[in-house]
Image: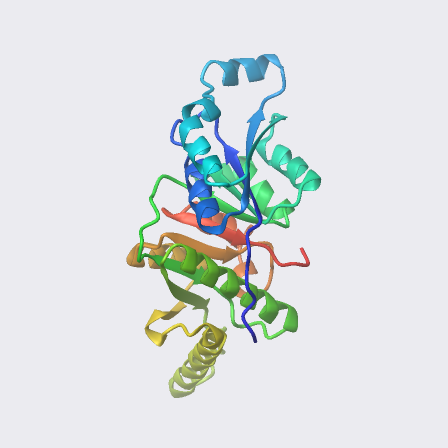
Length: 296
C-alpha cells in the first residue's frame, strides 16, 4: 500500500481551568509550530448552578492570562490561534458540541488517571470522547516529548479484512507523521494469545501448532511494517493480553507516545470486558494517541 500524507490543518486543545501546567496547551503549541495548523483553545465552563459554583469558581485558573505571552509569540509567527468558551457541566459533551460546529483533525486534552474501581461505577469524560468522537484524540500528561525518542504503536494482525488492513495502514501513516514531527523512531507491537487446544493432542503437535501461530503473526507484522521501512529490531511480537503487554513495552522503551486504535472491536482487543483502549490508557505513564476507524 502507498503511504498517505497526513496533514493537521486544525487542532483543538482543551484547556484545564483547574491546572496551572496546561499540558494540552503546551503540546498543542509544539505541534502547530511544526505543522502551521490552526489552533483553537477551548475552555469549558460549568453552567451556573450551585454545584458548579462550589466546585469551579474557587479553584479555577485563567489559562489564557497565564500563557498569554507564549500564545502571542506563536501568533506573531503567523500561527492562527483562536480562543473559545463553552458552557457545559461535561467536558466531553462540550468537546463533541464543538466538533459538530467546526472541522478538526485532532483533539488534545489533559489526562487524569483513574482508580480501577472508577471503571465499575463511573464513566470518564475522556472515555466518552473516545467512544463518541470520530476525530483522533491525544491524551497528554506532564512528560516532555524527548527528541530522538520513541513512538510505540499497537496493531492487530489477525484480521485480514480490507477494512481492518486499511485501518492498520492509517495507524502506521499517522505514526510515521508524528514520528517525523517529533524526530522519533517507531516501534510496533502486536499481541497474540494461543488458541485453546484439546488436551487429547500430543505435546509435539501442541508445540508445532504454537510455532505456526507465532510464525503467522510475525509474518503479518513484518508485512504491515514493510511500506514504512521499520527495522525488524523495532517489531515486537508478544504473547499475552494487550492491557499487560502494551504498558510494559511503553515502559521498557520509554515511549513518548503510544498510538492505539480506538472503537474497532475485532480480534484480541475485544476479548475482555470493556473497550481495550480504556483499560490500557489508565496503565500508561506516557501520552496516548487514540485513532478511530473512518467508518466509526
